[in-house]
Image (tube, rainbow, N blue to C red; front, top):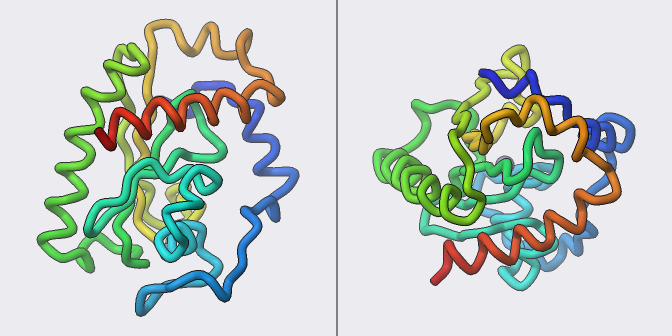
Length: 179
Ligand SMILES: [Zn+2]
């Protein structure tokens, strides 16, 4: 994976404030069988679509979700996840596999159109030793890349700018992915 080279200081919030979470009324969440109530993906799956903006959910499919990474390595860093809380590829059904790859395939041209990016890193971290922050719930990382981004990112990076730009980006991508 090449994206470790990007300097992403806003991820500092993830390190210094790991308890930073979406305010959640657990009585209103409808968890699937086997869900982990502490897992932010399971919470997003269980929550009402009305809260999609707060949870950064871009698209809800039958078996999968597309979510913006709250602590991105690069602008537009997305997560493509199955709805079910499973941490191993062999536990996915054939339909889940197909839908996840189909979703990934369709998002790439949308991202190219909206974000004008030059390439992507697509990756799956299996297990904590491999860098999975949430090893119990599979999620593919889709990280847009621009020519020269390893050079200009440190110049543009600013903790205070990111939350606003993520809101704007959520609106843009949400509209594109849900025509
Ligand atoms: Zn989960």
